[in-house]
Image 1 (cartoon, rainbow, N blue to C red):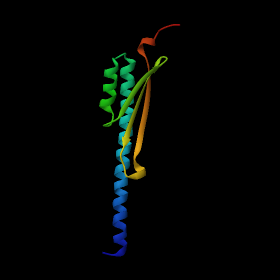
Image 2: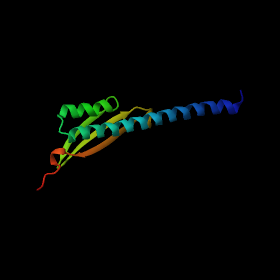
Image 3: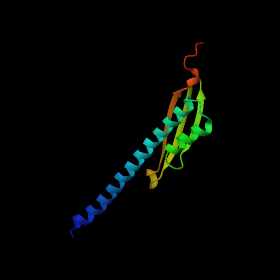
Image 4: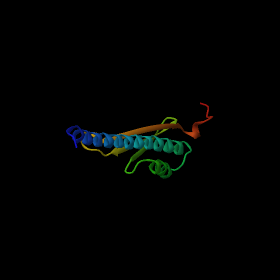
Length: 109
């Protein structure tokens, strides 16, 4: 084995592991977005809070935190999840979705 190969192989392994980590982080972020949307849709349909939270948690990455609130005519659902990684690669992922509450549709003021 040459010296160039001895240097190149560890660099390629680290590069491949970084790519795998980045793909896992992107997948977890997409799951957070999907979970927030699912929760907001459920809340907009006036489902009970427990069902809204369950809908969001079932689509979220494991260990995600889910919060919901109503502000005016909108239901907002926030999802936050931790993405483990070595040192500075550990991330806190966030997503938020809002949906118009169905009980406000067609109501004139």
